[in-house]
Length: 289
Ligand SMILES: Cc1cc2nc3c(=O)[nH]c(=O)nc-3n(C[C@H](O)[C@H](O)[C@H](O)COP(=O)(O)OP(=O)(O)OC[C@H]3O[C@@H](n4cnc5c(N)ncnc54)[C@H](O)[C@@H]3O)c2cc1C
Image (cartoon, rainbow, N blue to C red; front, side, top):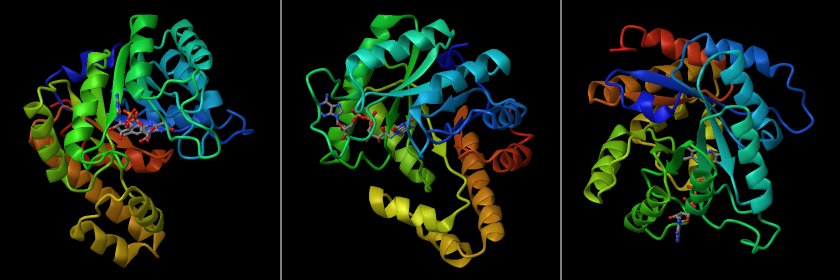
């Protein structure tokens, strides 16, 4: 099933993200992880490509497993900054052969130790999007950043750049995580004002590791609102308390988004099915309405 058809439905869905294991690790434990997340009946499961320390080598196999063994639509992430055009074409071919219909087209992080872009590489996600569009009948997603991408000079320019992605054939956008829903609402207004009218799926992360999130926020320059900062300050040394507070905070964000008419919310589950399950339980009366 194409994700754009899910996003057009006028009822609340939750989707989940997982990342492949590290290089050299077997896929053996992944089927248990996928089974646990699939049992929650998310609208789709996305699988990252070389992010969060996981290897890109397993992305196609895991997307195949999600969709063809567990019957949940899969969204395979695909990046281009560390690959040649030829390699990218071969991965698109593998996804097509596995019947994967949904790809999240990303640039990825620029490799630190190599010149970029080389002539045999795509420079921006919009170029990759065009390649995927030309390669088959895929539903294509793209990334967007309510607080602006860190390399963009300002948010207005970043939104202008998003337009290239859409012109190249991107069907929907998924946001970077945010901890203040007003950032999402303002961003949505900005996109609509710029004539960008595709669905914008908010990405919500239940934070279960306070130290990790402080580091990530410092690196991205993104904002930790005072209300959430206070939670992290108080509970980051107590993992069980931090997990409970992180789940409660994410639940509250999702309730607010749902009440304001958002149909699909993507949960950055970080390979923690227990956390995903608690969120789904907390929202059991809202899902599908
Ligand atoms: C939902 C989501 C999922 C992600 N999944 C992964 C993953 O699986 N693996 C992974 O490695 N990383 C992942 N990332 C991180 C992402 O790869 C990085 O944020 C990367 O730095 C930018 O990727 P992009 O696709 O947004 O790039 P682009 O859209 O190419 O944008 C990168 C920068 O270039 C600018 N730009 C874009 N187009 C143009 C143009 N035509 N001319 C001039 N400037 C332009 C933009 O303003 C931006 O500053 C994800 C991010 C998000 C939000």
